[in-house]
Amino acid sequence: MDRVQMLLLGLPLFLLCSDLLNLFTPPPPKPSHPHGHHPHPHPHVHHNPQQTVVPPTLDFPPQNHGSAGGIGFGNTISIDFCASCSYRGTAVTMKKMLETSFPGIDVTLANYPPTLPKRLLSKVVPVVQVGVIGIVVAGEQIFPRLGFVAPPPWYFSLRANKFGTIASTWLLGNFVQSFLQSSGAFEVHCNGELVFSKLKEQRFPSEFELRELVNQKLGNPRFVEVAGWSQ
Figure 1 (cartoon, rainbow, N blue to C red):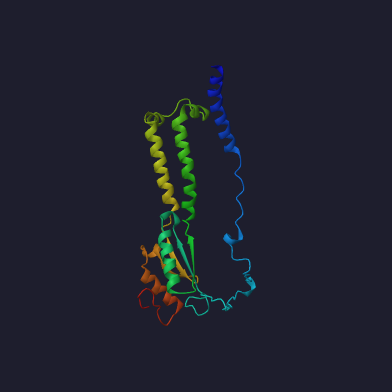
Figure 2: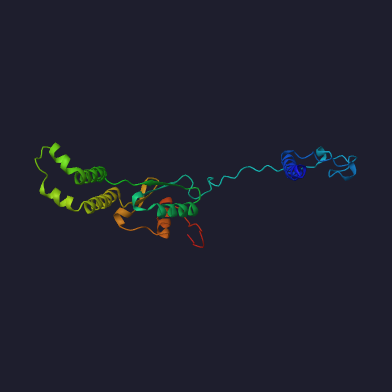
């Protein structure tokens, strides 16, 4: 009875050990294929890679699309726009239109900054925002350090609605700063000469209008055919 139990217990253990041994034993190498069934070409057939005929290539000189034959070659258009006014998309559209209408022309884009007083005031706005929020949050500790015996009455009005005061200060300050940083400009110069000014006209130029103005400054005797338009 003891031998039967040992046999019944040892047989599963033996099978388990054999399975583990087969699992971790690397597979035997694959037998080499006989010459009759080799996937490579017949050994008597020799392929000489040097006998492959390569057609000669013809070297053409590189073509310069911005050659002197371009209508706009040697001319420069500068578009100065208000970056904080989201005018970049319009400027990029005008740039592509001019480069297509006048091949070879150089179109540059740049930000038109606001006036100096507006730039200086825009630097002050964040300081005022932080100051107001700091007073609302910790005014009871700030005013005694500034020499006040008691906070002024307007402090208690602001402190009564702390969350509303902080939110209003943040939103109003961002609006004022955005206004001070915007110039509203879209100025187009051709070879340093003003062609169109949004600050003077108070509007954007159309693509056809800007193409006409640039063409007049370049002094082209004829128009360029672009997208079905006869210039």
